[in-house]
Length: 224
View 1 (tube, one colour):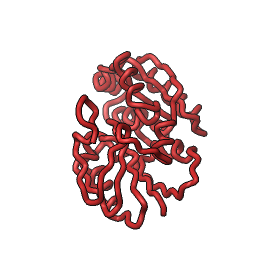
View 2: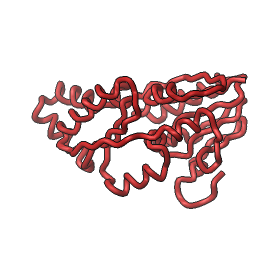
View 3: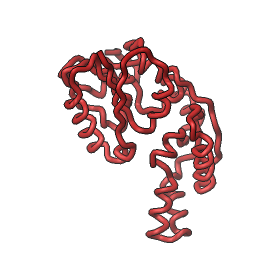
View 4: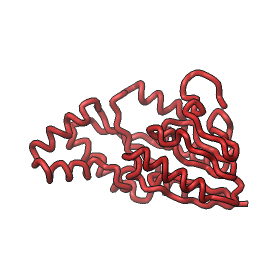
């Protein structure tokens, strides 16, 4: 039988690099929905309801601002990475993400997919500049991202990576942030596609059961 992966478009290229002997079907969700968690939730639920006849459904999302909370599995078992968002997947583990976040809490993470799929400060800057003019726009952007100290670009080997890297440098200059790069690790994404779906790394939801926030077990406590 076929395994279906429902993923954000930001992860499309990384998913396609994973070699697998299984029958895999990938359906992507527009990244722009992350700005509207309720709409993202509704779209994910629609896709789960419409996906029938698969061995299992893998939701390549984290909790994602609460969008995954309250989702109900359809007729197929549902598997979800036990992470807050996709950054842990690009870095290879939740622990590595936590370590980097402790090192510099004010970090804005970029990948090639983030810069090409539209979640890019360039577009926010354009809209604000059109409304307020360049000087006022820069002041507004500085206030919006006042808590950030660096942009960290995660290299995952995508075809358009150098273009994405250039965009991330541009954003760092606009916001007067330091810019750093770090090698990504696609082993978590590899496990997402091929397994094993260990319960410390993945949430297992039985058919027709509901996803709860505590399932993600991101703090100390029971792993479900």
